[in-house]
Length: 221
Image 1: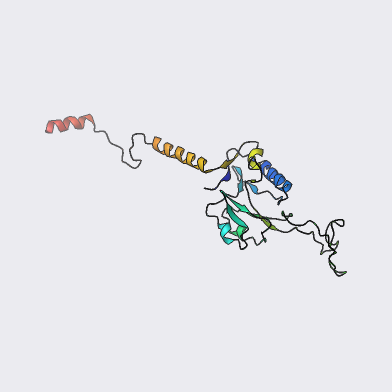
Image 2: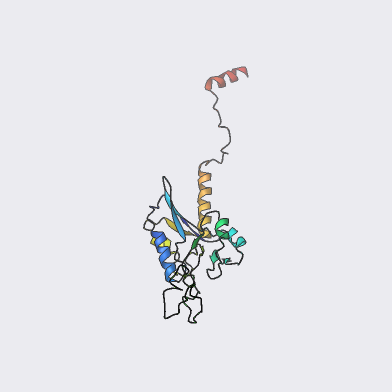
């Protein structure tokens, strides 16, 4: 079973600290700075929604460049391979994949070789030069593009997902195979405790025979 982070809506206060922590640690790694989770607010509860790292992930199946792959016990996205087609976002049943527009890892921030262009087009920058390619409407910054963003469980952090550690109400938890087995065992015990005598919950309750009926029956015999 894949690992994933899940939130308890009874504990979540909707502060957004998890989103800020996620954005900060990924930006420091040179990855997309868009948060990998989104806090959703309901009338009676709030909780963040993020990738569940499905065992049979539909996003893996639809990616045309194999940028999303099963890696160990989680589903990972290679931002340098992503082409931003958004097929994974459409396929995700949780809406946990979105597009980000910051610079992905392993993409040049500038070019040392001057690229000739016409006077009406963008003027490319060099490593010692301008902020972006040109100053007109066609200006653009090298390497910045819209690509998919999804939870990666902060695999680059020894302490695990940053959102789990940053949550002030401890509403987030990293779930593994042992956690799900333990939860299932508790549910089974709870189900058994509702009928401690082993009687089926669908059995008709036994009806006591009045004492008067018993005496009548004995007289007949």
